[in-house]
Length: 160
Image (tube, one colour):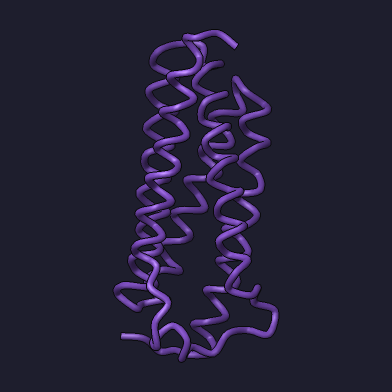
């Protein structure tokens, strides 16, 4: 690996880490959260940290690989913009669900988050199949989270 590649790897890792840390600080598991009835198939709480850590690592690697393979500066800029939008949407879901305590609003926001992941997969896949494949677990996990979010609404709603 060249020295020129080390800086983008560090940047991708740091951005993923900062996003994960901000998301973690927004996620408040308090009495409101524990009062919500969860579906029987909900993963145990400790699994969320393991899953999100893995997902953020995969996102960072995918971002670096896609940036490295981007055929033009414009493609790299669009790709970085899509990753930034996705990070914002990821944090937005946590904010709506945990801070605003509106799983219903969070569910609709999650649909947009899911679409942003699909956009990343499709865009990055044009020039980095590996990057696109690394994002598939993220799409699968957000799909599962969407079902879980929907069930929380069904079991506990209405909200607001």
